[in-house]
Amino acid sequence: MVKLIHTLADHGDDVNCCAFSFSLLATCSLDKTIRLYSLRDFTELPHSPLKFHTYAVHCCCFSPSGHILASCSTDGTTVLWNTENGQMLAVMEQPSGSPVRVCQFSPDSTCLASGAADGTVVLWNAQSYKLYRCGSVKDGSLAACAFSPNGSFFVTGSSCGDLTVWDDKMRCLHSEKAHDLGITCCDFSSQPVSDGEQGLQFFRLASCGQDCQVKIWIVSFTHILGFELKYKSTLSGHCAPVLACAFSHDGQMLVSGYVTTCAFAPNTLLLATGSMDKTVNIWQFDLETLCQARSTEHQLKQFTEDWSEEDVSTWLCAQDLKDLVGIFKMNNIDGKELLNLTKESLADDLKIESLGLRSKVLRKIEELRTKVKSLSSGIPDEFICPITRELMKDPVIASDGYSYEKEAMENWISKKKRTSPMTNLVLPSAVLTPNRTLKMAINRWLETHQK
Image 1: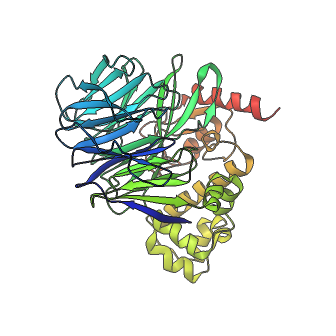
Image 2 (image 1 turned 90 degrees about the horizontal axis):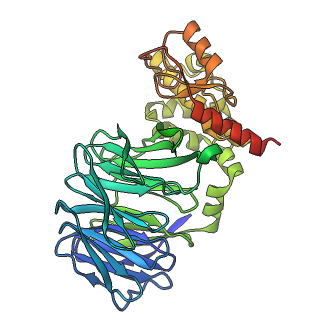
């Protein structure tokens, strides 16, 4: 599936970041250097290592064309390099002089964002090398930065755990607590979830942190309708702080881990990971793995009837339900059986006595069924009501932050205790707010997919 094909061991200290262009791999380290390698044979380029920084280099990134490399350091500077000859093009000093932790080019190469330990974030003009805009977060140092694929906004993550969204004029659109113990990395999927009228786009954002979690968010922004950041799900399989995460360039895979950095190559089946052991490992995915990630039919099978009993056990562990593995194995629960479980079978056949535990299992199974529904129909899962598992016609936002079909949610509230269908927690309010942005996206999807 994935195999280690090469290890680079040229750095003299922790590897902090690695980045790919179409032909090169760049790495940077606490040893104050940036190194460049050819993807043909992973040999180091003649003009590597690049040396200027007087302290640790925390981040490096290529411009979209790959002709320019940016690096940033504890010394308070962000440096631009010509990748063809290693010539230094510009030295941009953070206005506050604070150590610069992260840097990122905009998709059109016009801007470069740099975030520092004192919470300041700067947008630089990547052509004139001059400061364009400057801002700051309320608390913490900046540890992560990612531009949306369309370049209309970017996200920063702080050591206090806040995700902050900025537009291309450096105006703060939104700030939200995402990880309790601090954010370490964030990345956008390159593929929009949906395109709608008036430039409406939905993007997936992944964030990870010291709380051992990876979270998936749905982000939308238009100048007319405004901005929305919506929590989607938590990937809780890690048992240690998650230091890095990255989407593949086609948006079909997400990698995360307890390594200092990870990055996918844009045009080959390669993944690079860097670590505190001073090395960079290059991993290769086989074609079968890539095809599986890209195949909706395969995803559908992986989420339903084709699951083995071992797959079910793995799924239970990922949902923090590992105490039930023995019970499910004893009853030979495979994927097909899993999807057919009810509250009665959980109580009577599997003898799960705890009502809370049964409710949690059922909620997780409902999430799987919703996934099956959306994949089999081709409908984006964001458009499906969690209650009816049908395409929403009149979506509303409940006080738990999730969107539901209006009629279904009204019935839910009137017939049941005032709890969230998704979290089972008490709803702070029974007020339902029309989700006009989502409704517009659904209508647009219907126009283009059901002619």
